[in-house]
Image (tube, rainbow, N blue to C red; front, side, top):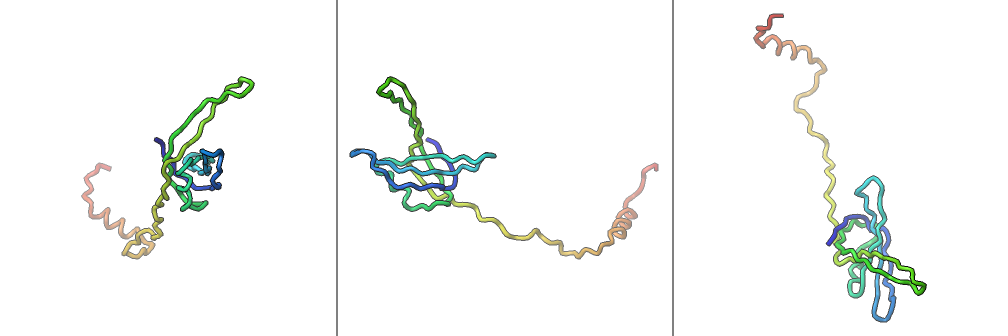
Length: 130
């Protein structure tokens, strides 16, 4: 089982591939690294409807399995395919951005720090030899 969080970029309609098989593809933009990745996922059979409640641009969390298969063409060439089969989709709750200013000191700044520094120096016992 794998999990990915990202933005829903493309949401395709369900395709009836054969009498017994249907699929629905969608793309998630993964911004977790320096270079965003556009990752194609698929829903199959009765899971095609899982995407109905989501809109492009929304932040999603997708749980999926990696599937691999081998195919031999009529001419004998062997090819390998990988699909990311989704079994759960959730709307990712983004943390609200705090829009509060930094704390403000209750004491007004007078611009004259020499007086407070001098009084601090006078109050320290000076037993240094220099």
